[in-house]
Image (cartoon, rainbow, N blue to C red; front, side):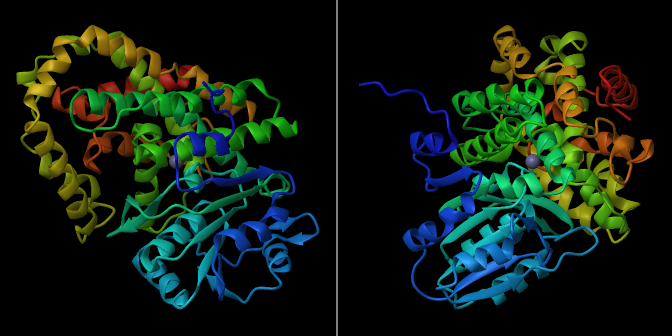
Length: 455
Ligand SMILES: [Zn+2]
């Protein structure tokens, strides 16, 4: 017997045999919370993890709505204080939330992406069962088993744990700030380019687990971001689907890499720069959206103009001054050198892996036409994400972010792409080829600008 292919998030979770099966995504979904708690969390005191910020919902605040629905349970409030940058998941913040959660029988996170990531980190640390109540369609990270945490001033994606259930009340999402929803669109459009970076890393033998079946449904559903009118409830439901199935695909493949390539690196770099110099930065997804147009432009130029297939594997070596470049990228922002050292450790690992993979690299170039065809399918033109961002009124340019990212910082972020972490992307290949330079970066920004993005 063949069953119908999965369509809803819950059907994908079942098809992929994921630990998170209970996904209630609908208007009024909060009403399903008591049953999920009764079924999935043990008796005893439960923690309500939140950031202390009021979140309006039909009939009052979301947190009050959760408390009312769980009036028969002992609840302990665990607050992760939001600073100027929202909640920053650095070491002290995670430790405080872990300490505040000791002795609980289970945990319920109520909030947007950062609170959800913190909930997964606390639940993993204390081995607590977790239910996530999602209050915004702002990122795809609600439906996976990873958290983005700050370690030594650098953003790192670390394995944490699956929530047992995810409750997505569309009435709550509808009332979330528009900026959060637009940020979700930005995070979702990464599906039009990130898979190309992941495929490249896999094809070069630098990553494993390439799984187009996991990524394809996310890319397919992203089309709704262009086709649907955001004024219609169906558009929000469509956005939630892209994000939730995207999160599940990340959890299923065990890595964010399938939906996090150059565009996410740019966003992480902007976050790290703002953290280092104490300035403000826009939401994760807002930055990812802008950066996706740029990354699509880079891929388009690489596939149309750079003749990648003609690169000779023997010539692909890191620049002799690699360590200096990595440290130099950070020294103005962090004169202590701590961030530079953290990044150098990762970058060193990346290129050591590269050096140990000569035969896979040679094989890659020997079969270039086959790889090129796949890459052309995975890397969409910059006008595609730009159209989705425009449809939702989301930022397409660095200067349209809140606060605006000036041209100097945008160029710094692009230049620094190979110098931040160990995940291999197109920019690493171009660095090895001696092609990742200011001239190419300007060409990429111009190409993005032609699609309505860029600076
Ligand atoms: Zn993201």
